[in-house]
Length: 412
Image (cartoon, rainbow, N blue to C red; front, top):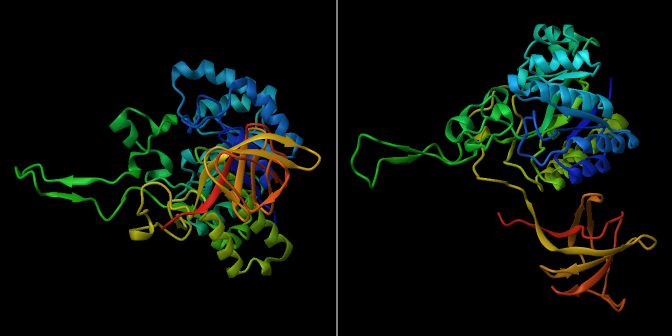
């Protein structure tokens, strides 16, 4: 049985470092154009080589997403990006537009067929394989049984990648026109504003009575799909012999990336070390960890059939995360030898036992429970008030001006 690659999203440097530090085998990311997450921060052209060098130094692969529709006027830009990717030693291009596939293969770049292609059977996969593609991300709508059959038919001739966690779209493999129709922002060009996540009314236009005849569509957000979460049946996916497990979320937060990668890393490693230890109780514990960061509620996606009814859509606008981050302050200085951060509390109080998180472009995401606080005179204190400066020992290096947050349980 092969151990699948664990792939994480990286929308900026903080997310990238969080993914690497948390145990990702690969990251996928985009530049400022030709990507399905055009509204994420993304990376500049001249950053790509630095990104790849950093990841390769940490034995992490880098996949560049060029998965939007490419129009005629964008072909010159496409050639430019592919040249940049090749010079940067990017490991693979994720795409589905035939022009991108053709040009990437010609450049000698490895190609992964995006889920946007809606590949749902082995013959379609073989079509792309024969074009020179190394890997395919199967359509979100495939069941686990169908995925197993496709992988069995392909054997080792083509790698198979699937999503294991993150946002789901109400449209077929994300090919939606709602955002474009309502706001002129094309989802297929990476510019979706997600109007499906909102609550809607039905109005009777034949009635003159302004006081009635309006109904909320369903109970809640009937087009806003719950998030995919496979942690409770991750063992079944592992036994399917797939090549890569992908976490969705380039527009989500660094702490989301850190948590999702860490949880699935633990589950995968535990299974291959002693699968009996990945018990039902352990998987429930890991799911509870995933619930702490952004989510719209969880379901199993299409793995056991088409989701429907209450199990398919969320009942909230935004996140159902059980934890929230509250601004505390920022790192004034960091001292390497004692691994101590000198923090200015600009926004809130801090107490011993509080759970805090530090985020920075170079530091990534650092999470810890505060076991000791020292004031500016080096006295050990149990509580520090807003407006004061304190010293706290950290498990890893922070940098000046890193942001500091307190993690609190969210009221339900």
